Length: 208
Image 1 (cartoon, rainbow, N blue to C red):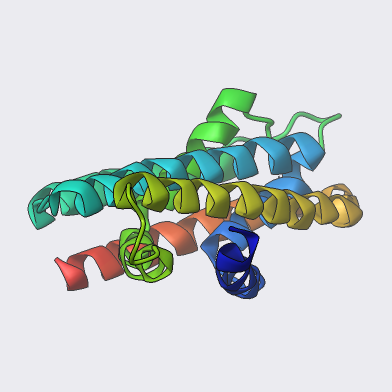
Image 2 (spheres, one colour):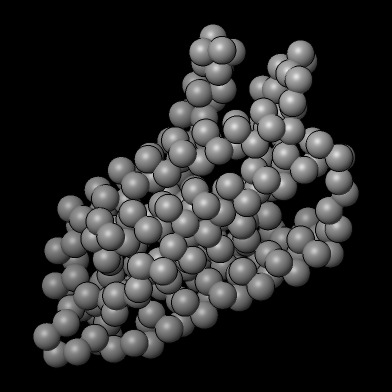
C-alpha cells in the first residue's frame, strides 16, 4: 500500500511547492491576520479541495457529465465574492490605534479559502486529470480510492499551506507602515484578492 502511494505523495509534494493562488492567499492572510488567518485560510482551501474530491469520485463512479454552464456560473459567483472581499478590505479605514487590516471572523477566513479553491477553473481540471492516474487498475472501489487520494492531497496541502501562511507573520511589521491612509496588510490582501478574482474570471470565461 505504501509503495503504491509513494509516487502520489512525491508528485503532490512537488506540485505544492509551485507558487499559486492558494499560496498567495495564505501568505497574504498570514501577513495581515497572523497565524489565525493562515490556519483558517488553509483549512478553507483544503475543504474546497474536498468538494472537488467528491466531484471526482462521482465522475469516476458514474462518469457523470457536469454541465459546463453550471460550473461557469459557480466559478463566476466565487470570483465576484473574492472581488467584493478585496473592495471591502481596501475601503475599510483602520482606526487611529489600529494599523492592521480589519480582521475578519474565522468563518469568513475559512469561506474565503474554500471559495478561492472551488472558483479556480483549473482546480477541477487538475483533480480530474491528476488523481485518476494513481488509481490502481485492480482497485475494487475506484471511486472511493479517488476520493481518498483527493482527501490525502487536501490534508498534505493544508499542512504545507499553513506552514507557508504562518511564515507571513515574520512580515507583520509591514502593518506599521501606511500608504494612502491604508496599512500595507490591507494593500497586500487587496492586490492578492483582486488578482485572483480577475485571473479566475478570465480563465473561466475563456474555458467556458
